[in-house]
Image: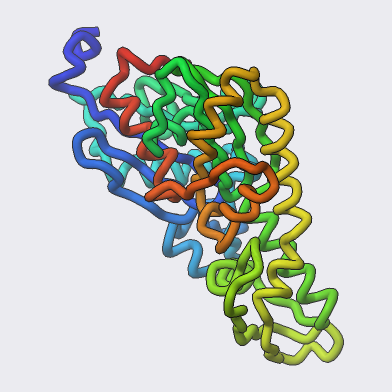
Length: 338
């Protein structure tokens, strides 16, 4: 127990945004030191990992029969316990050298809506990956802190974090969550919608990475002044032969509209549950957008028109959650955890 009593001398403290699409790690006093895809490649006969992160993502859709590239996270929670443990161990090992003389403290952001069993699975994975102490923080809180919202003030702040597997919508005041909603709509659903649209409209089958590339390059939530086009390559579902086509940003927007509307409805539902005094604060403060989905062109304008409130995209939307865990590490006495 002696080492526990000397945390300042022997502690490694890291914050983790364990996302469906990407995992980011914050090392205390150094900032964000790792950002890699939440992907693991395994050999199917042994289920032993052969690649993690960037190397594994390169294999998605391109592996031979005895190798499988998969995502151990689904909808922001662990879908494959064993593989997620391997992934966490790999990422933690890259940034924090564990020894008998170090105490590893890990702060992990988890979706607001997860069950106690799902949260326990996240914590157990971190412990088995080498952590000595694990603290979980709701993603909306971490994201709001990372964005720099004045969540400790007696006034309303609102965050919409659009991640890979979930969208977290929360209204905060006095350091806590007044009301929050978590819906399982995020970047993965946008990718799936694009894939389904292209297959349905053009009989062209595309891969997961191609769909993500389309979303990033020409995806939009609001009509653009100059619409974009992109050459898309895939396999013809009728002939089975490789083929290409030109896709427009209007088509991509149409394919994603159901998911965009689901996010808007979640925002509206949260606002309807907001106490009147805090709602009045939001008229001036507006809504902050974070997460990878905040980078979709025009999504701030779409939500602003739907709610009548000012909407702004955070400076580093992809790092909002992990930056929040970093600030929590720096002020652990102020921010509690579980």
